[in-house]
Length: 133
Image 1 (cartoon, rainbow, N blue to C red):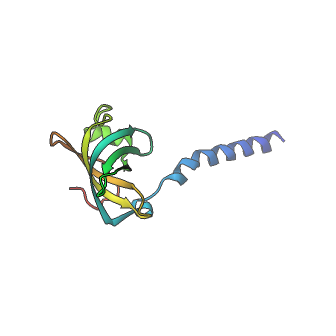
Image 2 (cartoon, rainbow, N blue to C red):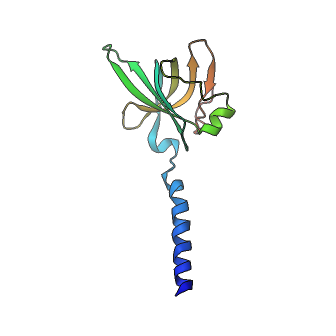
Image 3 (cartoon, helix red, strand yellow):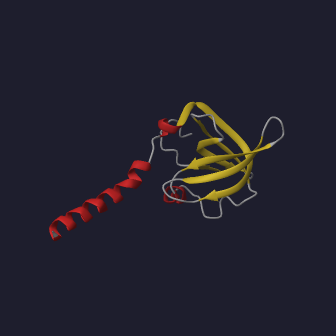
């Protein structure tokens, strides 16, 4: 009885450990390489979380109305190695993000790089290998 219980607990532990792996996605599963983006706007919030970071930015549409976009970036560890710091994207910072839009056409995308108002440009850690200019 004790052996069976230990085997069940070990099995559940292994299953629980694998759950984060199932949640990870490939570039082509969610984003479209044929929908390039170049968004100019201001940072609303920067979420530095694993497995990917998220830049929430406000972009003015053609009609002048503000639209909030969510841009996926690399993992925090990867971004820090690429030159980002925790203070790199404060709310209100003006940035230009280049990347690719979500396949569903929503205001969501994956970032390739970000250009700051002072001209600095940092790579966002796009993992698809499509374009690393």
